[in-house]
Amino acid sequence: MASTRAPGAKKGILERLDSGEVVIGDGSFLITLEKRGYVKAGLWTPEAVVEHPNAVRQLHMEFLRAGSNVMQTFTFSASEDSMESKYFEYVEEAVWAVEVLKESGKPVAATMCIGPAGDMHGVRPGECAARLVKAGASIVGVNCRFGPRTSLKTVELMKEGLGATGLKAHLMVQSLGFHTPDCGKGGFVDLPEYPFGLEPRVATRWDIHKYAREAYNLGVRYIGGCCGFEPYHIRAIAEELAPERGFLPLASEKHGSWGSSLNMHTKPWIRARARREYWENLLPASGRPFCPSLSKPDA
Image (cartoon, rainbow, N blue to C red):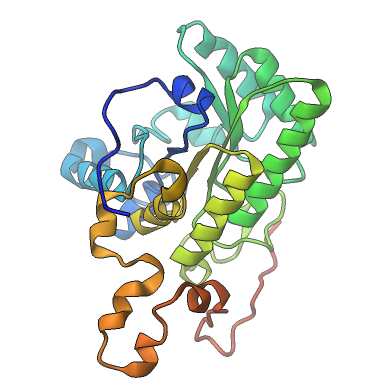
């Protein structure tokens, strides 16, 4: 399949989703820009948009080239309220936001930072989704705090909750780019490795191929990432779903499908890795023989 740009006419997000089209979101800004030296950890305020706008623009361009259809503004933690609460861990707050946003006349997408246990008051994911749709959200789902597998489980519970109440909405998922099966209810922020020791947990591009396919099979059509989700992760979503979308992202011009570019390597044992079966079945090692595979979340 040749690398091409997305075909022509602009369509609204609901028009795209109503037709069954896959919409690919963007990925990590705060954690990625902190690693690049443009954001200070702690309150994670986005002053880089003023101090280093070219750095923010560059990251947006990388996500665009990797296959993102939607670019979100880099405004997280730009208000005093969000500094205190880091918004939507409680469905009540998310519902209020949906109600206000509906007044704009624009489609509303509402995602929550929750896992399978539900919000911080114990409201289950299915009930959270139902309340958001009743408030007027056309797209519901989860973002941040949890890794790919956990996030998909939460969206599955949301889907079940909507089905049980006869409500309909498009589903959206933007997981972390880290594996977090040992998280508590608060997500990865409670892990002892947060935020400066998370690198051993980074998902491979092949993990994200699987995430994209499982999300698609679940009925999710808005698929993206959050903290730790790099441009090459977005490219993995776009490549996995290229058969459904009909084209590859521009960034695939320098990336052989499933390692196929390794066919040109001089070492025969590396050339032997130029196949999908090898990378799909690989169990990657961390290279840290004295480290545990899981952590105990802080209270």
